[in-house]
Every structure is written in structure tokens, then in C-alpha cells.
Amino acid sequence: MQPITVNGTAIPWPDMPFKWSLNDISSEDSGRDLNGQMDKDEVAKKVTLDCEWSFRAAAEISLLLNTVKPDTFVEVHYPDPMAGAYVTKTFYTGDVNCEMALNDGEMRWSAKLTFIER
Image 1 (cartoon, rainbow, N blue to C red):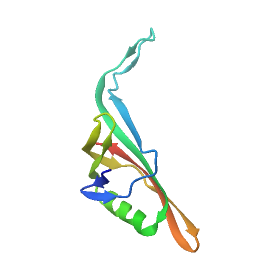
Image 2 (tube, rainbow, N blue to C red):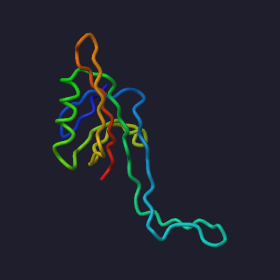
Image 3 (cartoon, helix red, strand yellow):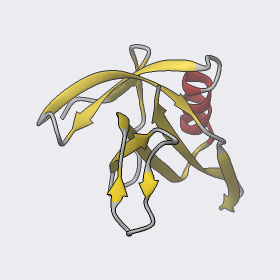
């Protein structure tokens, strides 16, 4: 299986399941009328990738964060279920959350982040 890459750099595979979602972006003119009829002015569809890495070595999480966070927008090459293949799209990341635990005196880190298609 190919790696997931960010700006051409392979990052550690996130925990499974790898979470992909397709989000409809609608204009502010969308909504229900007084008869309950939905009017939807869809302006785009965007992908989000929710990823989590549980209690990995510090070097692995450091590589991940230093690959993903220096730039506002990054090119992510990932398996896309809609395309049925790997694709490359531009994403930004939301907030990153990390937790640390000690395992036999060694720091182990978890990280959670969401890639949001530009």
C-alpha cells in the first residue's frame, strides 16, 4: 500500500479506521421555506480526513507535525474512496491536539488533526 504523503513527504499511517467524509458547501440562500421545502444552492463539495495517531514514538509524531504544520496549505496524496484510487488535493489543517503518556519511562505521543480540503 502506498504511503500518505504531505508535500511529497511520507507521513506515518494514521490509526484505522482512516476517516474520509464528503461535505456539501451551500450558499447562505439555502434553507427551508415556509412550506418546509428545502432549497439548496450547493456551491462545492469538499473532503475532510479525520486522522489520529495513538501513542507513537516522539520522533514519529515530531515528523508528522513538522511535515503538516509549517505551511497553511499542503498537498496531500491519499486513498480516496470516491475516486477508487489515490488522489492529491490541497488541504489545510484545523487545530492539532496531542497527548503524552509514559511507557517504561519513554514518552509516547498521540495526535489528532483534520485535513480540510481548500
